[in-house]
Image 1 (tube, rainbow, N blue to C red):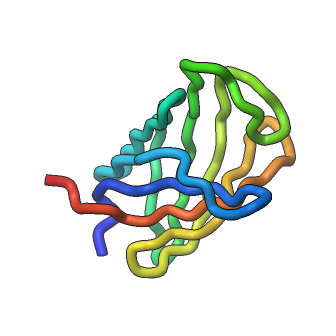
Image 2 (image 1 turned 135 degrees about the vertical axis):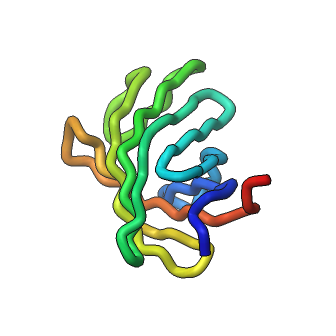
Amino acid sequence: MSENGIWKIEMLTTYDWESRATAFLRDGIYWGAGAQHYAVGNYKVDGTKFLADIVIVNHGAPRTLFGKKVDRYEIAIEAEISGDVFTGVGKDKEGNHVIQYKVTKLADLP
């Protein structure tokens, strides 16, 4: 399985998994966006581990994420790869907050 592709990004909320963004991964570069934010960064795959450093920038109304409401978040994602699904955590680089992530492949890149 190639990590290059189009991916659905979900976060675990109080009630269930919530779809938050679509991401495009290609050769170590991460681009993503949702209705009111975009995200850019780098990633690497080490065996069955997916590791990414990402900056999320809100361009709409900020929402509380990682215990704070700001326009910009820097996060590190650590996930385990199982087929076309990555599951793991996103950690706020400025604090101690953690959010569970699930990333599911939707399609290969053209």
